[in-house]
Image (cartoon, rainbow, N blue to C red; front, side, top):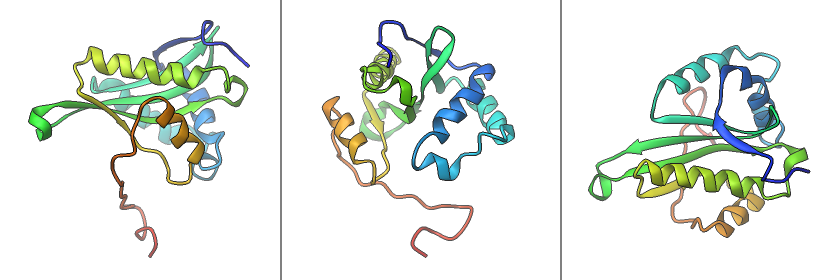
Length: 160
């Protein structure tokens, strides 16, 4: 277990990519869709994320070890009088670092970044089956206000 006082949050670098992918794969859902043995598809995605100032891929770093990650995307829009939204995605805390408040600190850091960028709202999605995650986000003040829909483009639509 780790404490939040010995962890810093920073922009991810290319050298962090293996650890980030390992975090994404170390999860019930991620274990079925991630391939930590082949980083090539992740390298292209990382390069695109890293060069776009509207995206921030971040890591929680403890003494040089990546123990958490999230992606923060800033979405300008016309709706609601042209507000910018911050979208939080791919939140993961390593299993050895869970239970010490690191997830709360990570989300708090993301919210602060959104405030600093002038965002009016922070939003995120969570898989419908992640009930523990839903309770976690609600404890942090997030409200389940929308129903999300997805259309896979690399195969038949879900449920087909």
